[in-house]
Image (cartoon, rainbow, N blue to C red; front, side, top):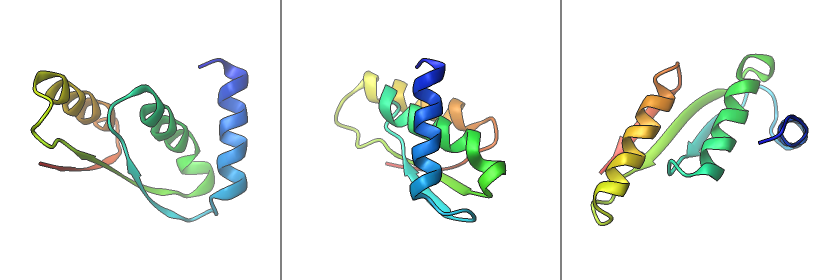
Length: 86
């Protein structure tokens, strides 16, 4: 995502999500949900967001879904709380 697009996204998030919010972010591991999760992570300290990421692997898409689950797990390892369900 270009810097301009990121800045627009961050501005919109700050416009609609109040400071000190507790957020549960559904992250499939796809580009859209990963971008949203990353944007919220970038604003975490500035806006005092308490972020929990949720990922559910339903067991119906095979290896691709397992790869998505691993991606989300690794993505969150930098300091995001992850709730992963099966």
